[in-house]
Image (tube, rainbow, N blue to C red; front, side, top):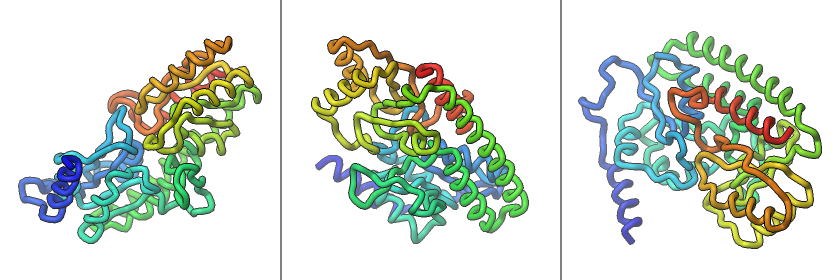
Length: 305
């Protein structure tokens, strides 16, 4: 009941709130609010200093479980543009965006990807895997879509945005080639990526890696003893050397898998912590999308090769 009251209060706050003069941007720049760090980083690369770009979900935050704070609601109501991933990644914030769509310019990043390129969800019928950023070439398409959409906004230097969008696109093309080359260093028999939840489907499809998660594509999905037992048997049968925890998900489930393998007589270790649904600390290399991808790939290759 208490959660319901908090949720209703949040929606009422949005319905009644209006930007105040004290919250307006005094330098005249647009205020763009993104949900995830991956989107925030991309938009900063595309618009540069032409807008004040902020994002809601910082390091270690799970977007599947995220609930907007009162501070977030204030940012959203004072934003000129709101950008979110879509495909139910920000599941608990869906109603917030619906309330704002008639009052704000809202951009859904996933709208830049044709449905035939999306991976169907195994958790929810008629839904898709929202973790687009793990296929760098697909994320490039998302960023190109954002660049085209943002260049149409009033009050921006359209040519500068196009130029910066093209430059970032070139960087992502180079990154995609690098990931392909690095993953080729892992033997075919060891090209298996096991994580806490099934976030790496697009990575697996793009770079020829088999992926398995104890949970489904959303951390809202639950796992049981049978799921742990099945994964333990799979790891033992395939003689897999490493599994990976995630920065935004508890490591408890994977530690149970490691212990289960040990009891079965197979030694598997934690190969490292991967950034899945959130990037690293803001001032670190992993606090930017390209640095995050490089870190993940280096960690995976080192543990599996």
